[in-house]
Amino acid sequence: MPQLEFSPCLEWLFAEPDDTFTDRIERAAAAGFPAFEFWLWSNKDVEAIARIAKACGIAVSGLVAEPLIAVTDPVNRNEWLEGLKRSVEVANRLEAPVLIAQTGNDLPQIERADQKASLIETFSKAANILIGSNVRLGIEPLNTRIDHPGYFLHSTLEGFEIIDAVNRDEIGLLYDLYHSAVMDESIETVLAGHIDKVVHVHVADHPGRNDPGSGTVDLAERLRWLVGAGYRGRIGLEYKPLKPAGSDVVAACKLLSKAFADAR
Image (tube, rainbow, N blue to C red):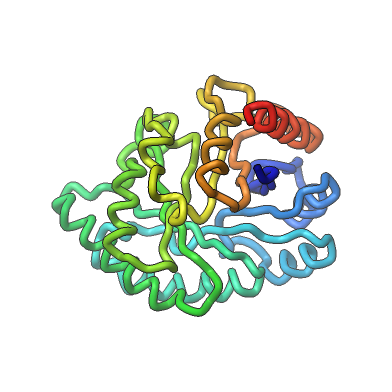
């Protein structure tokens, strides 16, 4: 079975007071990580990120497709698609293979079925923008019980329903083990037959959304299932560290890797 390859999210990890974002890239590279990821590109110096990442020999796994507006509302479609074009340009500049798409909130003034239809139409048009770009869009379900009350897409299964309706290779799913665990989903149930549509994976423990090993989720066993089912992408570390030191991120990865190996 392949080894796990981790990608720390530098919004939370390797962050120190008064640092710059490029400082975090250098710390992650020095710690031996092959890649990193982040959220918004519009509040960062993209050219500096590209320059420092290349100098450090570290890749960019992914970033968020902007703008963060409700794609559930068809009124926002053109604005979001125009933003996607710019996001693809940024992803290509950084050689990032994944853009993360969020749906926005469930809008009470629009029937849920109509919001879902809006998502399908918008992501279908998004696929035409992405074609030939070497970038895939990962639609992200989020939990509504703790972190994102009111968010539209809280079900992994419904995420795949949208992806299947679009039926384009450019559109897949970002599967976050933390959000899925909070929603009491069974990984075997929600991912069975859909592994080829999973473009990226995030991990954090629950409760707390903290370091692997700090909560009650058997992350290693769930990752073992993912890899056994055919997932070959990186594992994004998107958690709030209990301690700020980068050495603790490395230690958490070693613990998770050992548990993953032992589970085999």
